[in-house]
Length: 331
Ligand code: A2P
Picture 1 (cartoon, rainbow, N blue to C red):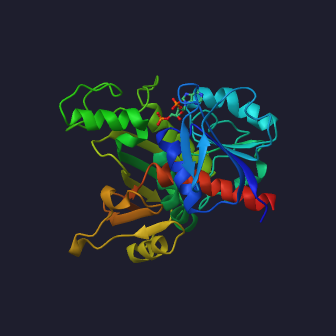
Picture 2 (picture 1 turned 90 degrees about the horizontal axis):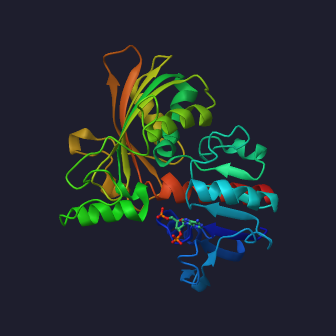
Picture 3 (picture 1 turned 30 degrees about the horizontal axis):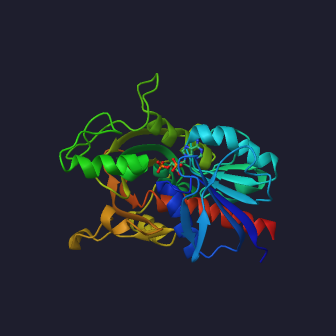
């Protein structure tokens, strides 16, 4: 297999560091490796595959050298400015920010769901929002078989989704310190507020789930709504998902279908208190599904509980899987 030159932009951040871990674990065929961040951490050292790499400051010349793939997780402003620079130099960017996700020229990919969309990229591929990714892995097989009519998301999202600053707010908040990242204390609290509020009074996180679900499942008119909540959990997002289908279903078949679907682990044994838990999902790459039951208030509805590590499958692992698809397409 051809080896690639690969850069990680935002390598010192929460997701960036996990990029390094996941790239190493999955043993990607890398020839030359670069780590980039802001001037604040330029010169720092990061270890990858037993070797030390010096963090470079990201600038206009960062992509003058031949780089095949760049994994970006350095915020929307950085992606807006530098992803096009990388793409102009022939590098394919897998971008973890929300900057390009709604751009019609940019595919938005969950490898278990819509890997074929990689073929029409023009240098930038967007990695979806963390809470959307784990939902897509579950919704795709269900939509293929029963045709989804409507979805209601309610999320319980970990502080690590807000980066190192979010993590620190919970850590310090538990010691009684005031929050710096969140607008209210997150310790012993639930904040129905992730990302900014928009004109329709939804948060941007809620609208991201709605927009991205439609784009990834190729259903531009799907009826979707969401309430996204930050909870005092360090790792893994949990989601209650209510789905209404066009077609009738048997709950046993739904469980079998999900148990056999790619990327999913079924944990559904209420008699023995078995259901997905944030603490169990942390550090893993799978999406865990359980509490599957009929929604008795509508004709063809179900409720389920979906948990995944938001920094791994919700960000780094999904991006690395996209890189793997890219490498395969280059060979
Ligand atoms: P730095 O460590 O130099 O600030 P997190 O979301 O976990 O806080 O991580 C954000 C990541 O994005 C960090 O690696 C951070 O680097 C990087 N970053 C932030 N702003 C820039 C920028 N203007 N140019 C390059 N990297 C940036």
